[in-house]
Image 1 (tube, rainbow, N blue to C red):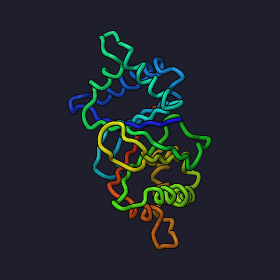
Image 2 (image 1 turned 90 degrees about the vertical axis):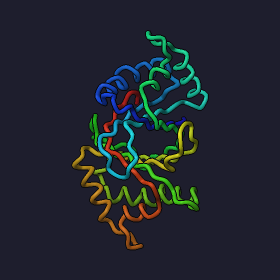
Image 3 (image 1 turned 30 degrees about the vertical axis):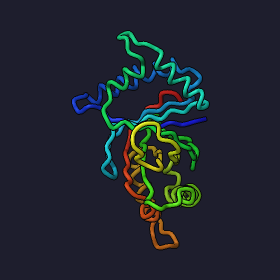
Image 4 (image 1 turned 120 degrees about the vertical axis):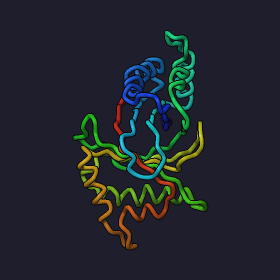
Amino acid sequence: MIKQMALYTIPTQTDGDEFWRYHTQEHAPTVVQVCGDNLVKYTINRVMDLAKGVHRFFGVVETWWQSPAAMQNGFQAMEDTRLPGGKSIVQDHFDRLADPFVVFEVDEYVAKKPMSGIPHRPAKYMGFYSLPPGTDADRFWAYHTREHAVHSIDSFGNILKYYVINRVNRIVNGNPICFGIVELWFKDRQELTKGFDAHKQMMLANGRNVSEDFDVRVTDAFGYLVEEFKVKF
């Protein structure tokens, strides 16, 4: 399976609520219908609050495909399918967006499988980060998945309902804005806040807390609290 992520903005004059309605209720169902079994899963995340950093996007799209060939077939089908106004599905969507628009493929690592009790609309955090020049990417990835993720799970406890780490492996469109993306799910915002407080209180042998130990190893980190809409899952 192959996973693609896209971060997008919308023109300043666009009504955010109306665009969200269009994206979730019009564009997304059409994509699912046209792509068929090529498209395995499909989630849209709307940025609600900028929790960290300065980069601001309106939404983050996540799609999972059976294979690279299936993804190519799916996008070709969206290019070939015309809407009543005469535009293709792809063109109709892109005409509503603004720069920057960034697309990349990722390797997905599930650090903690979904727990029971995740609500229909959980509190979800998405964190993006880059690596300082000279960092060994493979060594950092091993640290993130085998050390930091383990400490994070211990510090969050059962407050953390689901935990995924993504590593960018190919830029499809736009500039490279990150090396990795962290996704964390909680029951609600109160639980999210409690979880991150615990994350900062758990001390490691090197004298740093779990959060600090990660932050000193990365650069240009930014994070969002998002509203997650599961189109196909």
